[in-house]
Length: 413
Image 1 (cartoon, rainbow, N blue to C red):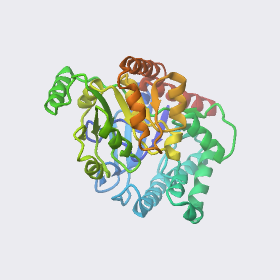
Image 2 (cartoon, rainbow, N blue to C red):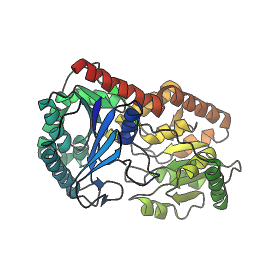
Image 3 (tube, rainbow, N blue to C red):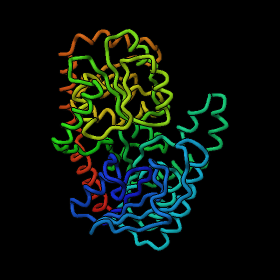
Image 4 (cartoon, rainbow, N blue to C red):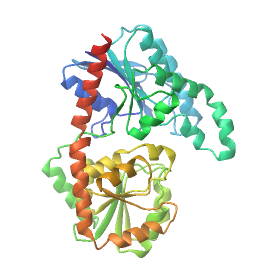
């Protein structure tokens, strides 16, 4: 089976070692392991480093069964802003040009967003009678509209009418829709609208479990010891991930003032310096910056609880981010203020704790009730690990996705 994958804004096999594999790499690697041929379409612009991988478009025969096609675009300096929207239009126009010389695949898996490029490739695939799934991971363009104060949303919604029309058309053309959660899939289907069919599916955003050499783990333990983040029995709560404006650390600051708890925050991003300034007067909040996989593994092992201090916004209510899967895979319970998809999973499987993010003191109150009940936390963590092994291992998630793509190909043939 010859498969096309289109995904932008993700690490690729040609990128530096150590980056977290996401949808494009996980699916392409699984397809190749099953003997299929893959052409992976992506942007020449690297979303994470904000640099171009090469000076111009490039086609790379990475292995016998994997070809990577890099589409040129102008790039952008910020994840939010007009320059990124212009980059996506440029990407779509260059993709349209490149498609003119291509032979069609047997089946395709198209990542959304961005908006314009999937619209271009979806129309091309339909013209050549190629079945495809659209993989929706962000609620564009609705997120753009919701980002503005209510009095401006009507104007912004009108501005994004072309993108909304493209979105609906792509969803309608797709043979099936893939989404990270059932809530997200329902949102997609409401946009068309239509009932769920046999090719619509939930594809969790999980990553392969990495085998970490013992030598790396020992070095990570020594490193944490030197930072006085020891396995000493202190109640420790950790966050590992990007530091962005989608996080609210104010409840953590409040809790650190009054509770004998150590908070460890690992990661980098646009809000890193601001958050450090906010916490500089508190010795029980520690910042590690970016850390590697061995250091993450040991930090989880020395923590009682993982916190996900996301703002309880529309997009996070639909989704389950990789931070929750990381906690589950490490056998750790989590505490979050999010409602929606993750709350359903949490309540049904008893794997986490909820706090009210709208009340700054509520995290303090909730943590105060569980500090001395570590057996309950261990039970929550065991439940989380069991759930992960049963439903969310990357191997099973992507093998099932490959099977679905093959069924779609056979049905259409």
